[in-house]
Length: 243
Ligand SMILES: Nc1ncnc2c1ncn2[C@@H]1O[C@H](C[S@+](CC[C@H]([NH3+])C(=O)[O-])CC(=O)[O-])[C@@H](O)[C@H]1O
Ligand SMILES: O=C(O)C(=O)Cc1ccccc1
Image (cartoon, rainbow, N blue to C red; front, top):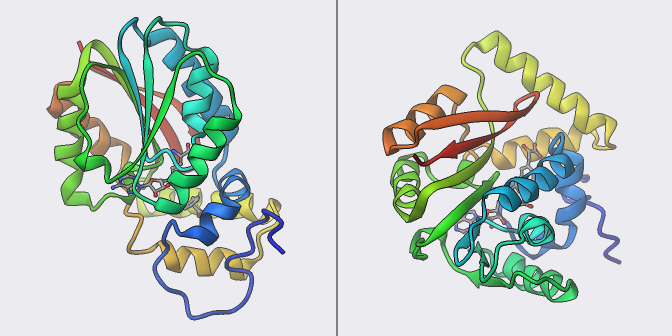
């Protein structure tokens, strides 16, 4: 029976590359809550940030929306008239479930769910673009073009909210933050086997950048300010502002 509890790596197995398939989609709320320090706080604050920045007649993009947590938080706070939330994910299992979640909530700001690669979707007339732990799953060589495309699609004064798992720029510091994160997962009920098998699964799929790499990519694209508004261990969230 599916209990919604993440037990994907609980048994010894031949570990393959991590994918956002049906099995992951079914347990995703439990997985992300027990794996990302501050997840609920981050999602709610992103909703608030969207509420502050959304303009009338503009779009809010949730790129890599998974089950739509950010879109739903934004819809709770956004008061702008005639605005629209566009939620995109290239995992069919995620997008299908996201559609069900969205339909279950009544929102004055409509949420449109699209199943596609975020790189295929036009971004225009955007007051807010959110990538909540999505860029880290994009091959590193494709990241610059995505940030530039987001910048081009944002209105003046628009914001990009970017949350990422970070690599620290010293080996000692990096190991400390990874250790603290693993301790967080252990306290949330994951065994050493689960932690280590998932780490193996993520190795080639989730490539982390340092804060400095993100900051320099964002400023090179044209963003005038990058504000790191949340950090817990090796997880952070930034707001980049288009002047
Ligand atoms: N190229 C791509 N195009 C579209 N979607 C993609 C792509 N690559 C990966 N994804 C999607 O990005 C999501 C990343 S999870 C985001 C959590 C969510 N933001 C949340 O606030 O709950 C982060 C995590 O699980 O750590 C998955 O649903 C992928 O299918
Ligand atoms: O679980 C981990 O170790 C993470 O780094 C975060 C995460 C959360 C959900 C899916 C993939 C990665």
